[in-house]
Image (cartoon, rainbow, N blue to C red; front, side, top):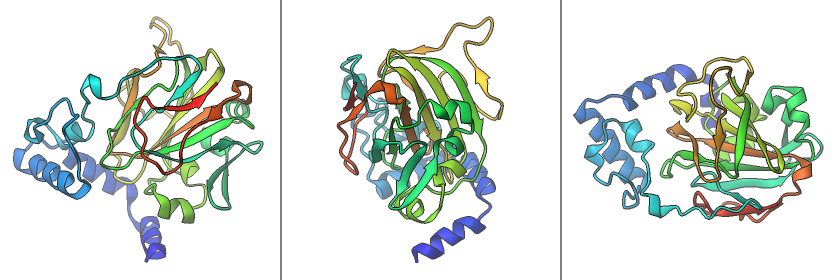
Length: 277
């Protein structure tokens, strides 16, 4: 059955299906959006107790519900320049160190930093560095926050496939994260370069950041942009969001001397300490 489901994803019109679901998710007709919201709450057992808006009918769209904000007190941020905080609610599938330029996707399956980042020069600074692959499940909070202080230096949107990202596909689809559509962002930090990569997936409507609402340009964008202030984000501050959900990959240079303290396949909360510098 698993092989059939993976084969089906190769055959599906991934982008067309995602666009259609994206249209439904932005629909403001009450009977459509309320039906989808109630289905999601039941199917994924979503608890709105910690949501800023607790009444599901008060969301204007399904996407508004899916990208819901949390009450400020539910994810306290204890800032520490020597800590790496979880940028998401979800769980880690990998937290390790690159073997030269190779990252582990699943058992006996590797992918390269160069194919993931789409740029050999930028990828080289993360050779042998620490990395983590973090997955957001449908029931999770879908906003992404900064694991440490950083100033944005570059970003690039890389178009690609839209395979589902889960245990089944990561074990069966080679180079999954490097094949899917993704946004690669680079930051300067007190401990060297850091990359935060937001990976899209099937029916993930779009990826947004606080400095740009929509990414479609495949040209490397350098920051700061002339005549605009630098994008500097503090530890725990919101970076962006997924409309639906997918995966975040963190990359650090070898010189950061990062030590992971992150349990794999165990529920994480945004702001939780996952590493020390």
